Image 1: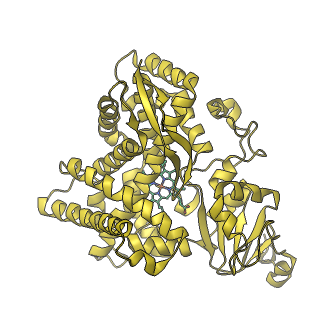
Image 2: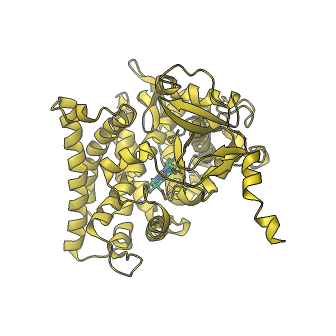
Image 3: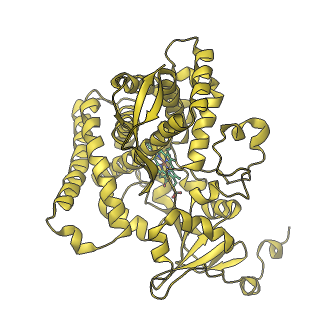
Length: 457
Ligand code: HEM
């Protein structure tokens, strides 16, 4: 290989790059913004008809959207892009500036090294007993004939599992309840503040603002309490909190109090809303597709012989796992991702200027008919080994890829499969009057108001 072959003549190459086409449907002044706000999922999905990379006008600002699996992979894997942009700035304002989800460069690498061991594949079995306990406790709370509010139930189990597994301690049981309430309110308000940035209006002493501020303050207070109590206990269990408390910066000095705090927030917040939303969709799928619910039950019984499903059973539950993956394909919790170009660069032969914001939608990618036959059909068998090879690379990346990939993919999949197995073995589900399982777009996608009646098997 010659030097020339790895360092092509930059100006000549730059001149070959094209400007991405402008997406259709923009209107004067607002550009595509109103469509993105009015029906974001349909809008993001239709962009594929305009090109592989397209330009959007959001008011005066140009934003680039990527619409093919290959280019979303290229974007996520390229060092030319970082986490930044309005979405992240508003997150930082509310949740803290020093957490792993918003850091870049060497700080981000160091923080990932600190948290990664808690999520490694070989660390997950230690969480098995808590995941099992929580999955079965969920089914025991439900009374036949009563109506389950799936939003609060899903949030509750997701927060309890994340908090009890990663920040271990007896006190977590009571704290997990408070965390549930605080996080649910904070997420609701955060999305509103991100898409409708009305600055000063959110400072007015209105009941909704007060409730949001109280919940946000309680979230930060809870995290301070958790950290202080762990320190006071003098205990150092082998968990994520210990790893954070013992972490050193690049100079070998202990990391600051603010970073410890922001790290706990940055792990608890994405860890609860995403899992909770996915559990809601799984309950919706079990109600909508009783044939798959029965198949899950049959599979679990054939593996367990009728005893309560255990963590160790999960890896033998192929169909259950495929139901989880297929639910995540059609209803990905994380439906939009953003990056910012750090340099003049290119994607798919198109010019991307330094500082440009780029967006893409896992929802649109995972429903693309060019990647999936019967793209809108709920078909867990498409994940069987003989069929999965037909799925193009990066067409199913609900946890993303590259250096920002979710650290919690194994942790999440284990609990989601276990919960699905536990609830489907015990109950069938029916939607009741007042239930609304249409998609609510927020920071994550979830059903508007899923109300189910559990019918014992
Ligand atoms: C990042 C999805 C559960 C912690 C991400 C990203 C995705 C994702 C797509 C990448 C964001 C980007 O590329 O900009 C999911 C899904 C989940 C899930 C679908 C469950 C169904 C969790 C859980 C935790 C967690 C349970 C922790 C307990 C994080 C953190 C990051 C992240 C800390 C930031 C990583 C970084 O920037 O280096 N998640 N996640 N996630 N997730 Fe998850």
